[in-house]
Image 1 (cartoon, helix red, strand yellow):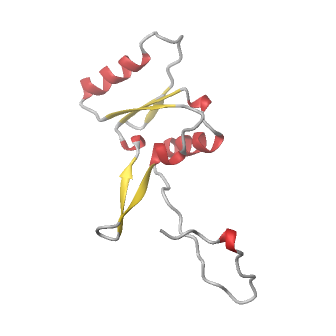
Image 2 (cartoon, rainbow, N blue to C red; image 1 turned 180 degrees about the vertical axis):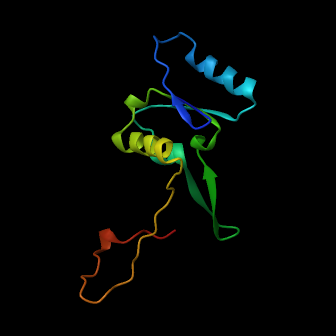
Length: 124
């Protein structure tokens, strides 16, 4: 799939017919940033969307964007990915935004049961 100025283009053809070089040439001709996502069974949503990595020197998290942040993205063989990864990719395409991290509230409220050890977030 190609995402071009707000629209999505599905190109289907036999293997080896030049879909990847076509998308790369299109991006280069238009002066757009380009990334290709190869769908595999071990591809994770973070591999597409990006991830925050803790920097011990600065004691801060820094975001490393995934390939979805390019102006033109070729997603190849997405049918080989897990449903969660497909959902992350298709959700980003549909919503035109990504959710990278979520905040989990660990405060204890009255009348709630405390979390057991396996339900707590691990600390970095």
